[in-house]
Length: 95
Image (cartoon, rainbow, N blue to C red; front, top):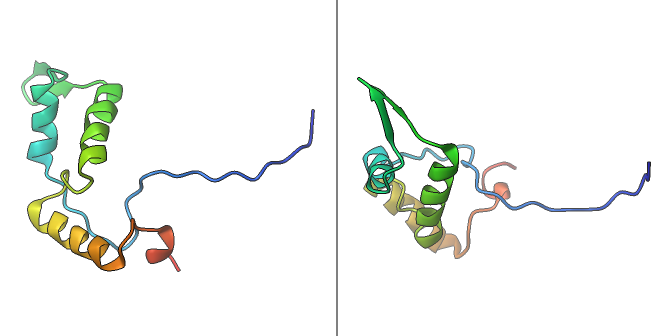
């Protein structure tokens, strides 16, 4: 085995520590229904492929990152983003 090491970095979306986020679950579930990816399995049960959730919600987040949040939460998050003038960094939350 080759013992070569490489420095790498990874960018991904996470829920920031210490920032309460309130998601708009009616909207999130509604767009899954609109895209016909929800399979009703009986009373209070349904199935959705994780790939479909990732693809559909991912597109919404690409278009408007705060759209998945409640209106109040989206406004608060957007105001903070406008204040700092960039996307959040992990150092904004974790010393």
